[in-house]
Image (cartoon, rainbow, N blue to C red; front, side, top):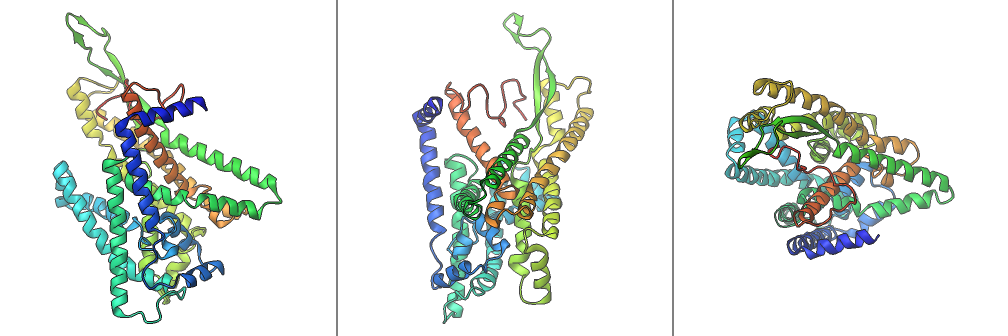
Length: 445
């Protein structure tokens, strides 16, 4: 406890870090306030009555989870930042198929800014498609629309939803640039954590007379969290030999310096989970309705504990894990950098053979990592079958847990970096939070 208090004091002593944390917390507070501002004219009493009567389905609960309650509250930020995630998916897919987008990706900072601008424009288009569906399929179905909902009301409400979603994106980008952590992922995490106490209390209330079941659920939850942390932080260190350095008239190491090339088991982080979840919600938001096709989509994708939903989610997670890993890790570029710096993998020739070796190694490591992510993603359905209530089952594993663990670790890594750069102790005694590069690892990776 004493060390924990000292770490808090160290964080507060670093002026830049202190300002970034305060700014991050302030912007998060603004986002949370926005999730409770109700759309003009919406009958909030009708919404609460519908939720109290149990009319809310599991998909609505999941969407509300990622928007911090904004979805079920019919707030100005009801759509959250999921449209931006969907737009990012589309732009990255275009980067593979469209040469013009590939060219922008290779143009460095200027190309990145162009892609970001196109992503924002595409986000507005997706919001314009999702906003009417949200009002029609959720707000109107709950009887919460104004009695005199005119064309003007529909138009202004759609514009408000678009503006709210874009404002959430702006908050996320400001956190990334001026705060601590990845802003977009952090906003999703905060929305998830905001529902955790309520979900646990509901589960405790249901099983108040069965404390053994509560204890077993907590133990199982901790085991799943531990496994998730291990897979997120798991790293395969590939040994490297680099050219010996000469300082003055003597060499630092006659045998050459031994370094490591770190290859993470889950190099793509939380993005495959977010991407897969966004893809799963788009058809329901846009196409679900009262016709035959809408009912089919609702049956297959509307039940987040159903077999078809979880099978499709697991497949998408595996696909996006490989896809995003291919974007994050370029074996040919790593091999070229090693060759230029005079480094090599023992027993592997520099150049093309090194690139092939790294590519095969990444593929073998990514496969079990993607399977583990998919397995964790479907644990809520298993917990539901075991008798856990809907609200707490979502935290038992699945997307919410993976996002929370990944984002929390990433944020802690950034904070620890500030402390270590100023010659202070890390956040944990005797170890360091993995994910950053140690002194013996390849700096260019």
